Image 1 (cartoon, rainbow, N blue to C red):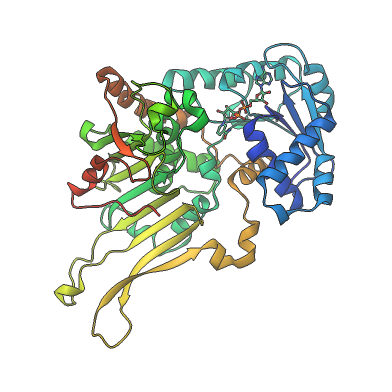
Image 2 (cartoon, rainbow, N blue to C red):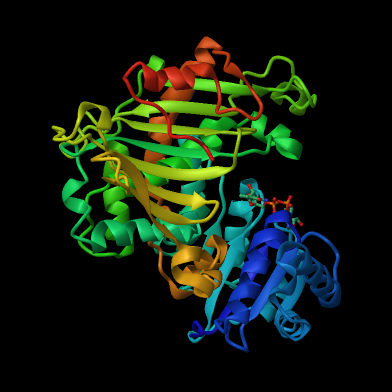
Length: 480
Ligand code: NAD
């Protein structure tokens, strides 16, 4: 079903994110018939390019970033015909007149402006969209991470954007929220009678959230070294996942009802104790690409790994630890949330049949899907022996070819912008609350000059991360 007619301007249309994610995502939506024929996508960036050259570049990007046989030359040509380009200077006057001519500003056309540029340019863009009378009253703007580097800068960014746009017009992207499984998590939790009654301290032992990457900082070393895992991953992505797991059921699946509940979770997070946090930094004995080599600094104390135990101070979660872990150059690339239920209170079976517990795992990548571990009798004549087996809801298996049509996070989120649905976007007060919680932790490390613990590449992080669990008789689930 096509969305309503729109004009989408991508500031930074020649950049890495636009080429790798935004335009391939839009192309896939185009191929599935969602983009109206008269809608325009306008790339706006600093390079001097004609429409034809921009289209050539985007064609190359589609070929590079999408699977080879997933589209036809005819589809590419039809999509490129809807693309335009304007050379623009975000901080000057060049290009704004041309942009005004291209972007329709009438009540029948949805306007969206994607700020895929450095955050330092957001204010300039917002101001020029207004002074040049390009953005109409219903215009939407989309902003990327990082949304600030602490509470002060996030507040400043929010206030810059709000000088020109209302909160209802601002779409702050966290692409983790665009994943099919993340929405499925809400469907599973609130669409079944089975889970919600168990979703609390009485039945849940603990929750684990792991986002592990195999890549290092690579070419982003200079940027990353000023950020670190806490700012780059925990404050936004892991925090958002934690909120969705821990929040109370919203009264409706609507943007403010969901975001109000998420905000309450952030506000209920206790400040973690020092010994509930393990910071790490990867080392490589083999390829010369340890963290310090990659960022070209011998004394950087920025963490590329963090594991922490968090507590949520409310009735639902009293005494239930939430363990978060994320890092670079780990043994596998995986993003997974696991709800580990308590053991059955009493076993009626032989002692050696063991005690069993259910684990609900929500996998964001690879192979998005949800698995529920249940205990059954081991088949065969060997007596009453128990085994744990997964009830597997991997989308590719359960849905067959239909799963291939599942949109990627960026596709979904961009279409949500056009539809005007903010449910999967972070609200300004959520982002600020997350920084309010994060800032004192980072300030404490900085004040003490705390060095992260080294860990070997290809592992699960520093040994201390395992100890964080072991000391309480728990263990991290395997990263695979
Ligand atoms: P990039 O450096 O590849 O591209 C920057 C773009 O901005 C280019 O198109 C450039 O022409 C344009 N630009 C720069 N200065 C300009 C000016 N004065 N006037 C007009 N245009 C100007 O950056 P990127 O990697 O595409 O990242 C864009 C934004 O998205 C950043 O805020 C980044 O933090 C964020 N982001 C990127 C990724 C990613 O994977 N690349 C992931 C998450 C968030």
